Image (cartoon, rainbow, N blue to C red; front, side):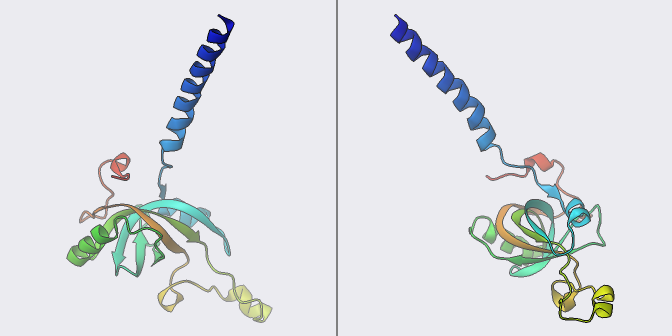
Length: 166
């Protein structure tokens, strides 16, 4: 009888632990607001992120914007580790030149000035990313998690919770 109790207790622990851990492992992290990332990233730093926004321009490089802070665009470069959703994004860009996306990658803050520059120039010089170094931040995309048609008013889809892998 004690052997059966031990087996039953072991099975119950395995069942409940598996259920708890399984749920937390399957839940994907929420996407972060681009505006929030732009506000908190510091000069010379980068972090791995999942972010949402309006992607526009070409497939290989472009910009990402958030309707909440439309004057602050981020330069985007694709370095995909998966082809998932790439064709869907290409089709939407061919039609309207922009799409609402949720992506994962490396988010870079403003680059540091070259340390070889004289101190007076380093203090006043603010290097950037992208075309003509016009962008304070850069996102290198490794994975396109979801793609939707962008609305005319640049708003995100009705429910952000609808954005997930299909």
